[in-house]
Each structure stands twice: as C-alpha cells, then as structure tokens.
Image (cartoon, rainbow, N blue to C red; front, side, top):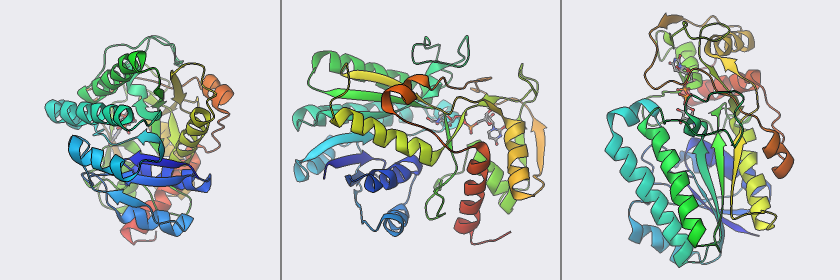
Amino acid sequence: MKKVLVTGGCGYIGSHTIVDLIENGYEVVSIDNLSNSSDDALDGIEKITGKRVKNYKVNLVDRSSTFDVFEEHPDIAGIIHFAALKAVGESVEKPLWYFENNLIGMINILKAMDTFNVPHLIFSSSCSVYGNADSLPVTEDTPLKEAESPYARTKQMCEQIIEDTLHHYTQLNAILLRYFNPAGAHESALIGESPVNKANNLVPVITETAIGKRDKMTVFGDDYDTRDGSCVRDYIHVMDLANAHTKALDYLLSEKNESNLEVFNIGIGEGVSVLEAVKAFEKVTGLQLNYEIGPRRAGDVVAIYANKEKTERVLGWEPSRSIEDIMQTAWAWEQKRTGVEI
Ligand code: WQD
C-alpha cells in the first residue's frame, strides 16, 4: 500500500481528498497546524472509511518540525500539498502573512523532498493564477495575467518555485492542479467546509444565510459584462476535485508523466453566475434566499471557467456532479454541522 503525505489534511479539500485516496487503496498521513481547520475532520474521515489518519500538528514554516515527520515516515511515496492560506480578501489585508506562510511552507516541502528522496508532488494551485484571462474557457496554455490578489500571487510564485526547482532537481516530479471553485460536501454530510474563521466563499455564505447565521447575503455586483451582470465561475464539487488528486497521483506513481512538471485545470468546464448559483440553491431546497445586490468586491475576476479536455484525456478524470449536487450536499452539511434541520 503506497503511503501519501497530505499537508492541510484536516482542511476542506484535504479531508475530502483523503477519503478518496483511502477508498482507492492509499495509506495517508497528514500534516496540518489546524490554523483554519479542526481535527474533527479525522473523525468524519474515520466514520466514512473506517481508517484513523494520523495528523501532525506542525506549521510547515517550521522546517525542523516538518523534517521530523519525514524522518518518522521514510516510506512516503508522494506528497499532496494543500496547506496554505487562501482567502482572497484577507490576503489583501495581510500580504506578508500570506507570503511567509505560503512560500516558506512550499520551499520547506521541496527541501524535504530532496533531503528524504520523496519523488512525487501534487500541488494545490488555483485558477486565480490566470487573472482576468483574455479568452474563455481557459486552457493550461492560457497566458497568466497579473494576479488580482496577494493570494493569487503566492500561487503564481509557488508554481514558479516548483518549475525552477525541478529544472535542476530532475529526479523530482510535480503536477500542478489549478482548481476552479471548490464547493459542496461529501454525500454523507460527515465532512464538509468548516472554516474556523468567517466563511468568505459564495456557497458557504449562501448556506449560512439560509440557516439563519446571517440575516442576508450580498451579491457583489450585478453590473458586470456577463449574461446576467453577476460574476461567472466554474463551481466544482469537492468530491470530483478530490478524485482528480487520486488520478494525478496514480498517474505520477505509475510514471506515465512525459515531463517532470505538468499542469492540469480542475474545473467542470461550465460557467455559472452568482445569481444562477443562488437560483440553483433555491430550486434544490425550495427555500427563498434573502439577498441584496451590493457593490463589486475588490480583487474579483469577472468571469472564468475551465477547458477540462486535457485533464480528462491525460488523467482519465470525469467530473460527475452538478451545481445542484453542490447545493444539495452543501445544504445537508450546513444543517448537520449546525444541528438544525429545515
Ligand atoms: C465567487 C463569486 C464573488 C461571496 C475562490 C477561492 C480561492 C480560489 C478560487 C481555490 C465571486 C461572489 C461571494 C458573497 C458574492 N480557490 N460572492 N457574495 O473569489 O472566485 O475565489 O476560488 O484555489 O481560494 O477564494 O470565490 O466564492 O469568494 O466568490 O457575490 O458573499 O461569488 O464576488 O464573484 P472566488 P468566492
């Protein structure tokens, strides 16, 4: 059984990916400093898979503690690196915290790969590296525009750090997965998006409004040049996203990769506007969402969605869940985590 180290394993995407990895025969170890997650996620993972995953409460900025984990696990076949700060708005207010955390953590992971001979890395990148792309849908060859936030810039910089490092360390292999907008929850409602801090993303804001944690939500602008004036995104169910990681790891570990650095878009290839997402939630739940139209949000890209052809062809990945599935599972999770049934 191949052992995989997942950084950020107690987080939203990390915990769902661990479920998919275990269900596909991998052994998993996690590093997560729990700064924006809870190890309750490990209980949910255990209930779903029957496996208890060990988490090391370590900050990757601390190289010595990070290296101790690798000392303890000399048989790590690959790393999936999620651990990073990821709130677009917060990064504008606290750029140095984002650069220190996201870049030094990345550098320490690469140093550990070289020091402990761990040959394979899957990096959690983001569609935000494309900025406001000139044409849509974006492919992996779409030129990267100016980052719209320090968060997006840390993702661009990490991609560059990996590229320059692997140019020299040719024995190391990496796949960059550029996520679009992850949302939804595991069908069991035993794990889901549970930010320790205030939710920023659209779907948890919708469910928090519907359950009464917020009086109403704001649609950040309806005067954009889109079909209904609100921003367009490619919402991908977190379990489809999780499976993309397993497929990418299978691909690397079977040494099918043609170069030691490959990039894949992980989106479903459809654009959904904010107002359409709200309507999808109302349709699925039968609830009326209390929202208002407000001013645009700084740092927002007008529209972005993926061309997923390369990922489907090369990794054999097939997303299967829709925006309605996202809303149904996100709503089930919100009710479960709040202990309220509506
Ligand atoms: C989506 C749309 C908002 C909240 C996210 C992650 C980032 C990266 C990319 C993976 C925008 C609108 C939101 C609200 C709203 N993910 N919105 N009212 O900004 O696309 O970025 O995906 O790496 O980490 O943050 O996602 O969900 O914040 O916003 O109108 O209360 O919803 O303006 O148009 P975003 P989001």
